[in-house]
Image 1 (tube, rainbow, N blue to C red):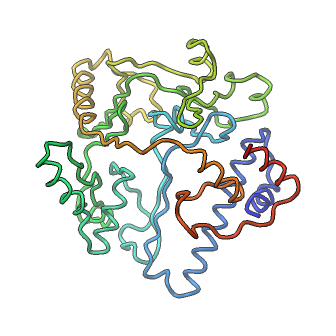
Image 2 (image 1 turned 180 degrees about the vertical axis):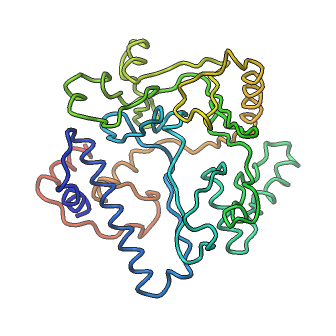
Amino acid sequence: AAAAAAAAAAAPFRFDDESRWTYSALARYMDDTVAALVGALKERGMWSSTLFAFASDNGGPIYRPGGANNHPLKGGKYSDWEGGVRANAFLAGGALPPAAAGTAYDGLFSVADWYSTFCELAGEDPADLEAQQANEWLRARRLPQLPPVDGVSHWAALSGRSAPPRSEVHLSSQALLVARGRALYKIVTGEQPYSRWTGSVYPNCSAPAAGPGVQQPLFADLRVLGRRLSVSADPHEEAALTWQQDCGAAGCLFDVASDPSEHADLSDALPALRAELASLLADRNRGNFAPRRGVSSLRACAEGVRNGGYYGPFVDVASAYSPSPPATAAQRERDAAYLL
């Protein structure tokens, strides 16, 4: 039903590329759904006491068949370029301070900060008390300890009562963003996929005809049961097909405040700063929390098939799924093939 509604929503518009048509239809369907939700809150008299937060977790996927476009930013989802990490967000609702309405917030904001911000609004301590208790046991046995919560609250800054609290964002093990005065320096290291700029109309009708990896990159992180599958046995060909750029261990350096599209690499002009940020990134990486998350299981795939083609929370959670619509004969045949 959702797919049909999305298709109907996109019907009035013209698209040269099927993946762009699909992506736009999904965005339109989401927009209509949010409008219905806001309408329901207003109808029930709840909007005046609601803080409505809308945020993306990353930039759009520019690989085929992602269909997104982050123009004029470089790159997209799964890369550390601004097209991959600079995401859209907004706040609305009656609980938003009047002074903040209609303004733009220019502070650095991490996805981890939503938790701490909402905790302050609810009058709760964001500290992970269970982790603190566990650390006593871990320290006694000289075992690695659980890290504290990363997020910081932005409510005072969003309300106009203080300056933004963040001066850096540890984007990944390969990238770091640091504010210095009016500059916003960013170091990007290692191999990065999707390292190009897309045009204002992308993808378009020339993408499929041009061949794989030419007008659109191929997906660089294809995995089956945790094992990565390369798009080519030749590393050089794979780099070309996924639009890869290698910034090396020393890294590429940008000021994304003045150059958000990341055209001007400042590495040669500011070698000392690049070395400083590379050292800072290495220091931040020492605190990375990467727990063992178990091994992939085919049971999850089978559960997704039985649930109408959608992954659920966990395969062992009872009563987690609402009943799926009856499958057609074609769907039953397809599902049987998936479960072989």
